[in-house]
Length: 446
Ligand code: GLU
Image 1: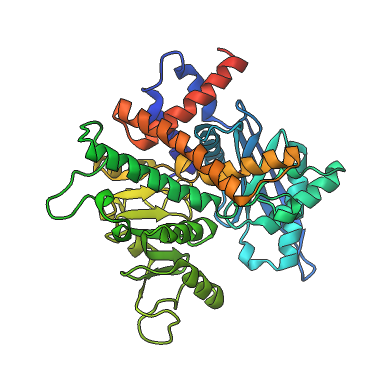
Image 2: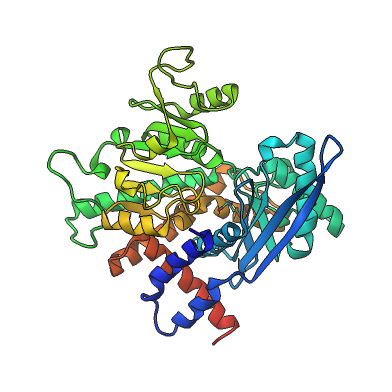
């Protein structure tokens, strides 16, 4: 399915819940304000020149400057970048940030580039972006396959173009160039906070005997409801072991959850008794992929586990499933095989809208992407604030502010879900869309 059409169908799902006065404004969110595109020409190490199509979609800026990451991936398309920019508008809105939404991408497999080719591509992308971005215009950040080093190249090239320092024009930078403490772990940490807030709420509803919205599976007689189990028995499978999946697995495990499986693009590693995400990452670094980590027999660094495919990981009988890689991994074709009680969407758009309807009707509780992975852009916001004032916070200060921000937006989402007896996704979309509409109405009333 076309990724942008898929994103629009999530918007259509909430249309009937909007007030008659708000409804006409929804049309403004159905197209990005601008889609910039170009072909970047990069000199390769062998002297040849290669073309790479590049995009930046600026979706909506009623609440503030456009904000969103940049991905380098062979699967990038214009429709995907437009969908991701719409989700950024909603994500920044539900998080209560003074930002709109945008997203950028280049069609490239960065793993096939040398270090200097990757630097040249990043600098070419910065020159393409330069007329369209700025601290108060559009603030890019890392996304799939981009990192603080790439942000450093982008910032350096951008500052050359404009002729002065502007650290607040990019976030997710290295600390030495004005990055924020706590930014690297922020998305994963925010996801674990989201899960903990959910457990707290469900437990308090359960003990209060509340009969409101059936947001979770009815307790069965033989197995305790997942959230009533001791935390060490709550099992978690994480699909995707990049920055987001790694920090989610690491922090969840530190907080006592039993992380039984993680995967990268080549496959998953599973250990029923719970694996050690830090040791697993160390093994992945040494071997180049998770293949071979936790294998049974043969030469294994970490004994006792098994290898499986990404698809098998999605179908594990775990309490919590955490897709943390790319879009559309859970579709109408594999929903019937999903056994988890809860899905925490750490990737953007991992569940298609058709699959979302099927899972919700089976009472699978989904913490939606626009809320679940908003920890990353929230600490990007803190980074930008620190850059603008030129005064920097400790990691403890950043973590504390992130927790407060995510708690506020969780409570708004949960309350809305209970009031309307609607899914957390619909509730999150409504909270986010209504805030954007309020700003649109003040700026450009219909
Ligand atoms: N790429 C991240 C996201 O999808 C972070 C964006 C940002 O920090 O601006 O939320």
